[in-house]
Image: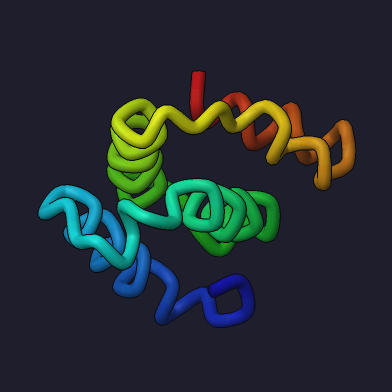
Amino acid sequence: MTNDEEAAPYAYAYLAELIDKQHPAVVNQAGKVFVLTAQALEADTLQGQTASRVVGAIKALLSQAGVDPTPLLQQFSPESQRAITAYFS
């Protein structure tokens, strides 16, 4: 969700909840979840405490799933890669 700044916090908070509960729909698609969240970070629709919570959940998800986000970042511009990486470091 990158176009609705009002709905994004609720949608991503729910995503973090699904990750925390290890829902198969998100656990089995960790790479896709990372990319979609990175797009929201890039578009600044995911910010503040919600961004921190979601990023924390996704870091755990990537680790659990054994997914390296580095190759996934290649689809973003170098500037966006730096911004996204800053959230995940």
